Length: 216
Image 1 (cartoon, one colour):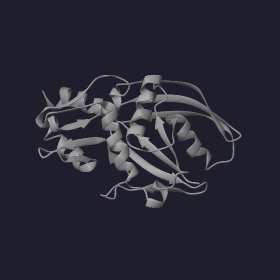
Image 2 (cartoon, one colour; image 1 turned 90 degrees about the horizontal axis):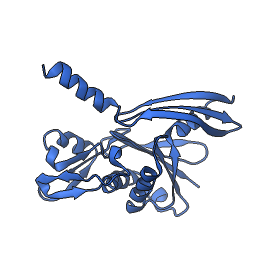
Image 3 (cartoon, one colour; image 1 turned 135 degrees about the vertical axis):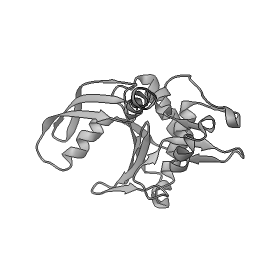
């Protein structure tokens, strides 16, 4: 049985599979390890996800959707006035998940026993988790479970070492900052404490630098 792991990120996302021994990371059509979490719709209604969408967003912001992970669990719509479209955060995330799943070989996608794990921030509340599950369902991913990102990080580290331990996981992404303390005992990982800032990431740094350095 194979498992699929998805990092559904604020700015970039990635997908891999695990057969119990080896992890395989699947690249985007552009041969990148990560795919930008971006959507672009042209005037003909054609929808693009990933690098092309990200590259188009700067020139066509009214036809694009980005940073929608921050809105998961809310009713805030994403307006694309240039193409007369309104999308929900779940719809946008579903498009990214669908694109990622398409990178997998057919034998994995078509295997009914394949289980999928999507990582979410430790600070995600129940509404945000439910929203992520709704996006996965809309994308047709089948059996899905959620795992907190710090737990996934520690599990990855523990594959390379034998000793148990306590870990501090510092996760500064494009949209959020999460810090967690996790403990690994006998192959099991427990999250002891976590905290973070929902609106603090690389994009926020970019905005501050632009407002205080570039603008003046």
